[in-house]
Amino acid sequence: MTTPFWDPGQYLRHAGHRARPFTDLLARVPDLPTPAPRIADLGCGPGNVTVLLTQRWPTAHVTGYDNSPEMLDAAHTGHEGPTPGGGRLDFARADARTWTPEEPCDLIVSNATLQWVPGHAERFGDWITGLRPGGALAFQIPDNVDAPLHALMRELAGTPRWKARLAGVLRRTDSVHTPGAYLDRLARLGCAADVWQTTYFHVLTGEDPVLEWVKGTGLRPALTALADDPEARDAFLGEYRDLLRRAYPSAPYGTVLPFRRLFAVAVKGA
Image (cartoon, rainbow, N blue to C red):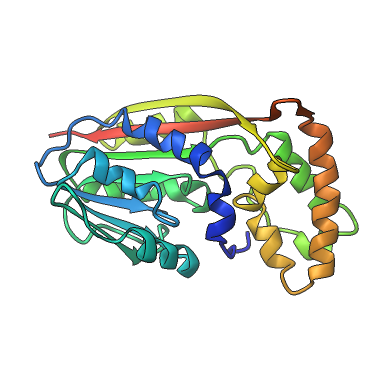
């Protein structure tokens, strides 16, 4: 899989839809063990949802981590600093494949990031070790790699015209595990684990809104691989756009994008 170049502006085009699952995840996180909690957000992106952590825990010191300079620039500029409740929000560069807490955390959270991290379930042990007793690991990830927007992308990338340029570029179909596999892994690490799935039916508006959605996330590796050839990039987008129009037809009120996500909250034992 190609390491993608991220575009904060493109990602934020559907910021409201993308933030809702994070809000739903936080609603299931229990009280944290200390009154001024230490919180880490892995894969914070432009920081727009990291801010929600400071609203739920106003006295917290929250650090958002990301490995994209473009995303971190947006986060630093738009959100960093003291928070109204007496806490602090800051951001730092880190890679979830290797990051471990430098100090005990009350909460480690990740929003729509772990699907990009090969072997992420193997990292759970290190992260849980870094939690205070009663602390939580909470994450949500897209669980729709079999949906048309991804299946069509892979099929197109595998056609004779594109195979040489895009072979091995896109996210693999095994990048997300089953809910049962996550539950088993977290429970064996001594946590009380709550795992569930939700399918959101996003009503998107505008011209080719599903294409615009996926240009901010799942399509980034292909766009990165074709970035040095704008003509080829535009041709690929045109073919993919036509496939998406048939798979996700528009209605008078917009275009419906069904989107399944997987959630987990694991609380460390005392």
